[in-house]
Length: 425
Image (cartoon, rainbow, N blue to C red; front, side):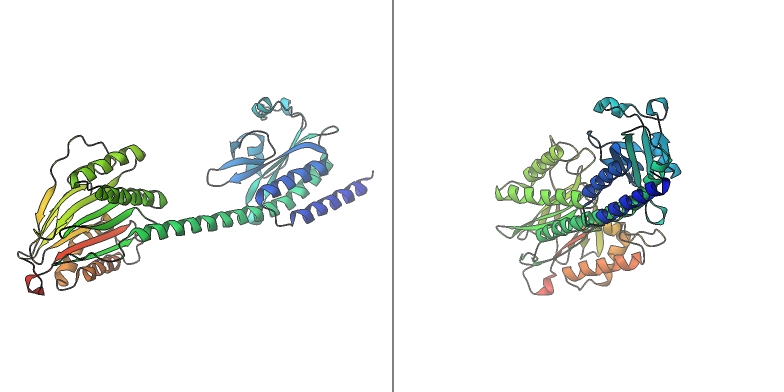
């Protein structure tokens, strides 16, 4: 066979491979096609494709081995050298080359005699991966094989790059759909309407940093003009904390349905979270019981603070610290009695997450308690929900172009002033 005849035959084979690879395969099928085509064209026994994982800077075997997924640092061994230098490496005797890793042969029972290692370079000189062709059926790989292998790899890299991007887009769209469902579920657990307690009005808002968030709030109306208030913040952002927040709400509602007391609900939910959550996760939580007849609120605040109490008659603010550790932090053997506050006419109880207090502007200055007090002082006649909305707007105005860095939750409980025409005594 002349050189021209060999080149022509190789060109035809590569064009046929290119035609096959143009089909809309998924990435794993595409990888198998590349390996099979490489073995056929180069008359070799086996082939392996390593895809480059940019996030971990590793080369990952997706097809071509009997082992589970293999991950190799992108600068190690023959495959790593090929990836780093972007050059073909032809090893005629693998066991005579100190760069060769014999461990895989030992695990598979296969003996690698000779090997072509070819970098797969995609668009804009991006590293897609590395193609390794093992054991020429007759002899070792020669210059003609190098020429054909590089031409084949060039075609394969382009289609693999396309397939990899397509897979990433599909995975991203699937994740977006799952996150959207999670957001719908979480938003669906928020109160649809504010509760009705004679002499009171309520306001609430939740704005996650991501599509889902770890903050939560809930109102659970009870008998005799009583209302259970829940507000919490699961550590972190995204789906995991959102699930923790939803779990707390669900457990609380079950506890109240079983007529648990404020203390028992707090302790049992805390202990369950200690068992369920990883060691580095917790939930700050305010558990409060408002009595609309006595105008008192008793509460436990696990890591959630400060709790704001605006005292209308004196025009002063009282800020209550957290009463105990966050939920899920440690088991409670003894729980101190709940804190108790009296809400006089015009008083406001504020459950405000640190996403508001710590909202920073471009210069790094926080909105803080002063920002909240300024809104309330300037809008005292507004309804509870109007005050919630104005605090939210003021914090974002304060932030300017700086992004929201944390989930935001605001719950306000306002006892109506005596002149509002209701029984506020």
